[in-house]
Each structure stands twice: as C-alpha cells, then as structure tokens.
Image 1 (cartoon, rainbow, N blue to C red):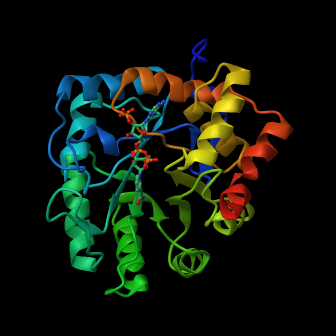
Image 2 (image 1 turned 45 degrees about the vertical axis):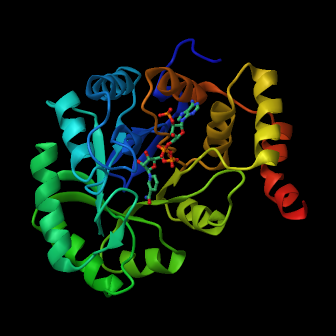
Length: 292
Ligand SMILES: NC(=O)c1ccc[n+]([C@@H]2O[C@H](COP(=O)([O-])OP(=O)(O)OC[C@H]3O[C@@H](n4cnc5c(N)ncnc54)[C@H](OP(=O)(O)O)[C@@H]3O)[C@@H](O)[C@H]2O)c1
C-alpha cells in the first residue's frame, strides 16, 4: 500500500469558480452516519478521528449534505473540526427529505431549500456556506425555481458558490444562465461512464467534476483493478482513484470511509501515477463489461 509522504496536495489543485482552490482529493463524509445513512454513527469518536485525520493529511474539501443522517453528518463535521482551518472548504447539499433509513424523497421547492440552508448554516456553525449543491433536480418542481432560490441565497450572502449534483449537461447550461455553477457531482468511475460527456463539458467550461462511487462494481472491474494494483503495491481503491485523477484536471474525487486506515490509503492515491497502458486498460473495462 502507498502510505509514504501522504498528502492530498500530491493530487494538485482544482479551482472552484476561480474563487477558491482545493486539493483534488477530497473527503465524502456520507458514510460517517449510522446504517442506511440514518442516525448517529456507532463510533462517534472514530468518526471524529477520521475527519481530523483527513484535515491532517491536507484534505481541504469535505462533501456532506443535510440529508446525511439527516443532519447528523453536518453536526459531526462541526463537532470534529470547528473552528475550521482557514483553507477548509465544506460543500453541503439540499433538496431531499429523509422519511427513514435508506429512504430519500425529493423536495427542491424554494421554501424547502431556504429552510434547509438555514439549518445547514446552524449545524455547520457558519455564517456563509462555501459551496452549496442542489442535491438533485426535483421532478415536481421547476428546475429554474430551485436554482433561482440558490442564486438569491448567494446574493443574500448565505452561500458563496453554487453547484449541482445528479444533473445532465442541459441542467448545467440552464442553471449557468441564472448563476455561475462551480461544480457538478455525479456517479462516475472508470467502469461507469454514463456521464463521460458531462466530464468533458465540465473540463471545457472550467467546472469541477466531483465523482461519487469511484470504485466501479463488478467482477471484471475488480480483476483489472487487482492486477494493476499489484504492479504498484496499491489497493484497488487507490488504482480507481488514480484513474479518476488522470481522467481530467477538473476531477475532484471524494472517497468516503469510516476508517482512518482506509482514509490513509485513499489519500495515498494522490501520488499514484498509472502508466498510459494501465490507464487505457481501465478505460476499456466498460467495453469488456458490455461484451460479457
Ligand atoms: N451526490 C450524490 O447523490 C451522492 C451519492 C452518494 C455519495 N455521495 C458523496 O460521495 C461520497 C463518496 O460516495 P461513494 O458512494 O463513492 O462512497 P461512500 O458512500 O463514501 O462509501 C465508500 C465505501 O467504500 C468503502 N471504502 C472506502 N475506502 C476504502 C478502501 N480504501 N478500501 C476498502 N473499502 C473502502 C467504505 O467502507 P469503510 O467505511 O469500511 O471504509 C464505504 O462503504 C459520499 O461520502 C458522499 O459524500 C454523493
């Protein structure tokens, strides 16, 4: 496993809207909550230790959402890290309700988003949220109405930067007519390339792309990851993250974990460089999956 000289800074930086730069290896805090992304963690001290270690390792971008827990994740971040280091960027999200464990229901109405942001500000102990992401477009609400609400909240000084999640290129274009969009967060990995064209669009337009579910699922993906990992004494997760970092300079992976050991491994991926051949072998996995 790569563990020497561990620092998220080895991944280089990405700009968020030309206003803030963060290292290209962030931390996704979703799995710190209880099972089903519901309730408190079994090991609250352990969750705090993971967050503190992430910051120690140079991670300066943490992703969360009001719906993780719900509320618990934002509370844990404040509990572990407040007062925050000056360079730490916390990106939260709103637009879902949580009726129970593993249950998610849309609500991106202007009234809900306004209330959600007030709650996030309070729990995160902030006067302004660095990056606020619309968690997902709500099919029952005008997309423009959701984005206009975020633009108004930015004008009111409650949000610094506006971002989107789970969107198409068309959503990004429509939102950008209302307010500058600094990042897009969609499911993406070497084996899961549905949003390739959105990654390319983001790269062409200076928008950061934040992939979730970086590992890629399935037997074929696992075999290729293992083979390349062995050549570098690296774990499959490190290889999957290294592929993402090589895919585009605007890529900002946010691997999540509830374990300090896994966190250290994941940050180690910042300094892993794949050969061109290895990069291509991973890129071809989606075709191999399709033909089996
Ligand atoms: N925008 C969205 O709709 C959306 C959806 C899902 C997630 N997210 C965000 O994206 C982040 C990443 O999400 P994700 O789905 O990719 O991952 P994740 O939900 O954060 O979980 C990653 C899983 O992989 C395991 N893991 C992490 N590092 C590992 C390692 N080095 N070796 C072995 N196992 C490891 C973790 O288990 P251990 O705890 O045991 O390490 C965890 O179960 C989330 O934390 C969240 O912030 C956003």
